[in-house]
Image 1 (cartoon, rainbow, N blue to C red):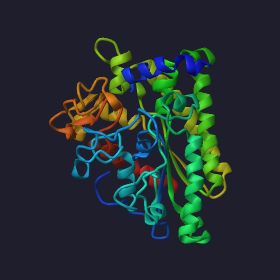
Image 2 (cartoon, rainbow, N blue to C red):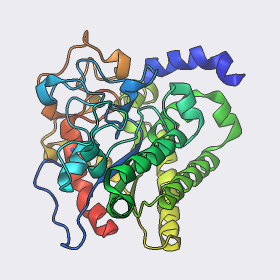
Image 3 (tube, helix red, strand yellow):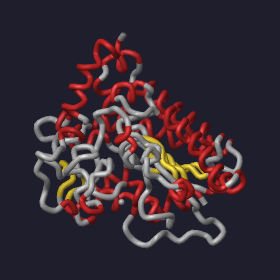
Image 4 (cartoon, one colour):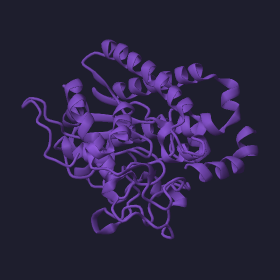
Length: 357
């Protein structure tokens, strides 16, 4: 009843506020090639799955993709290549990671990895209900379908080898903090910040365990980013000067601390697994504090429109865009620009590889 009564209000709220490594592939030990990269989670790793579901959380229109191949909007929530693309290229797998729901996907795509991520989702089961996107449970079912197709394509033994040696990426906490805990009153009634964080961590750990059961062994889990410093949240909660919302950042920091500890414990209990905590918080804070070190000029707003609130449907073909996206860390008020994705992946990749091999 809660969702049916408040759904319209939440959608209005959401759309009033809501809402990558370009160098050579990293060197890996000769005996540990990476056959595929497989991604789960939210819009940071969604390669276009939301194009094929009924939701308003899409990026399949201009100016999204304006710096992609032929200026084509693909459903990636950025102006060009995404975090997933930079990861898969840097790991030496392929140029772009495709969306699993793309009807043009080929067997070779399945063999080298796909993304199941859906922009707008989260660990909190309420989050995808608000945004009408694919929950992690749904992504898990898609992964099971994928395994069946993979086995049919290459055989049982080869499929198992791909599953065991691939790298898995998960990014799924941002919308929980930005949407569910910030805009849904019942969540703050049900949970204080520590209790909510603890719930999210438990759900994250459960998800890692589920994909481990299906064959995943090298798993990288992105922490929460500094949600309080996202351009939209600066506008909504940062006061007249649009400062970072420290209250939001503190909630994310607590979640990250808990998550890191639990992932380390989990790794020690999952045989032959490597589970990496991928810091999505401190690298971004460092970039905010030292933008010129990375060739950036603007980190407090996005390139699309005013950059202060525009994202998804609010960032559309009627929106003006900045002249030089390479100077902007954010593309819209939530998502990193292609340059931002490049910088971030370049920063975290060495530690990720070290942790997973």
